[in-house]
Image: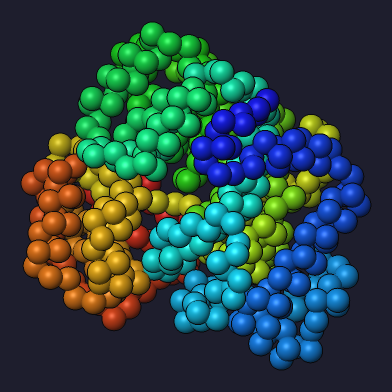
Length: 442
């Protein structure tokens, strides 16, 4: 059960409120949930009509007014929103009352559909997202005081900002141990093995492929551990992943799905028959080919209505044996990410490239729109980018940040006017010819 007022106070969120609300709404009937969502959609449409010029013009052109919103089906009247449309209409998609919306934060996201997008969300959105996530933690049987191991990204070193200090405090309050997965693999392997040996870790949160590599090495040493649950994110969870995780960690495995623009979208329940869409905060429609069209019911700072994120899924129309009536995703077909490999088997997730581009300030300086790293068989990198031309200093700095993790790698920079999507329509930030996870049907 989530009950941490101190964390809410430090982070400026209301997670506890949404957690309690969603703990009740998860058992709503379909009619009750429909009414709940319609109320939120009506308030969102009223907001965008009054405060967002892009939607005011669009709705006036369709002779549509907020009072016309009497069913969720009205979303079919809205055109598809893409990242390119957002970039082209960024100012008109900025609410005129943005300054009065509480807790607005900005950050860059990449994703499967194009280049860098400076996204916004507000305290209400983040609270709702985390409320849904903490309900998911309940589904996994994890308690607040349980020890948790986070293997899902990189963590900054060096001089600590106030934001980093608050993050450290929140980790301690939530009993979370973060690991810098962009660090040296051998050191991480030993550190993780020691943690699992000396502490009772109730939950491991990780990218599937990273944990799969760790599990393979632990398995080769004949090591076995007892972990309560494993939660995976960001990449496809494959059957061989589940099998090995259950073998090495004796853990129940739970998957989740989300995207950078919207946040958490769907979570796997203990019945393990699919991922339940968090219907309280997102409406999932699809194009004819099954690709998502997402409407975020919470984000007033940067409204997403019928947003295409490029991922597609297979849905399960059967009701879950767990008793929850929410729509289920049977299988996510998107989220495939290649890794970059070093001469000695080191590897980096594509998210590291996003991290260093914008933490270094280079992405902002060159007004980066899109990038793609192509790794050739000799491990040389071709760094393609759309934006202003990098200076030699920027190139040297970026190369240094890459070679800090992958020594001896050579990087060639190529300024482009555009970077094409793959045959499937997906944007791939990393393409490796070495080895690793490949995109199906490419």
